[in-house]
Image 1: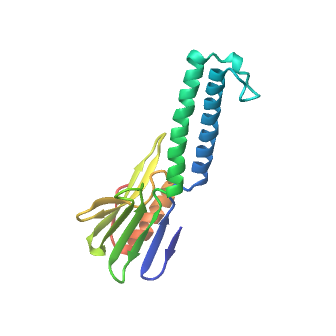
Image 2: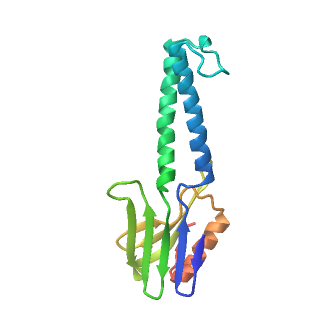
Image 3: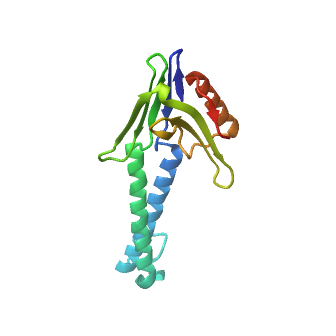
Length: 184
């Protein structure tokens, strides 16, 4: 999602609050909770889940392993829910040609560097660079090449843009900033 005027371009970056992340965090939570309940029911020798008789699972070693997988899954699920709640990776890119300033903002994990904010002059932008890697794990990333800061990614690596979309986005941004495009 972006917003443009004659002098200002603002590109909003989606963070971790995506439907897929909600889905996988919820599925992982339910699955790991199921593993933990089955492991605990085998230890207690009681049916905590009516669908699965605990007498079929011996506590040592199956019950211990299932409990371990349940606890590990709950930790991973907690991590996913925290990234969703904190909306890690979200932010915006703001290009102001009138004032000649570029602002790039992202939310990170809580702590010292929770707010990642870069502000630099537009005259320091050398080019717009596209990195395309095809294959099983295709990766298409748009970068700003800047003096002093190096290559700054503008989109998420998991954002599945087609080659045509990334080229169009790069061309529009390069035209707006009046800089060349590198790489393909």
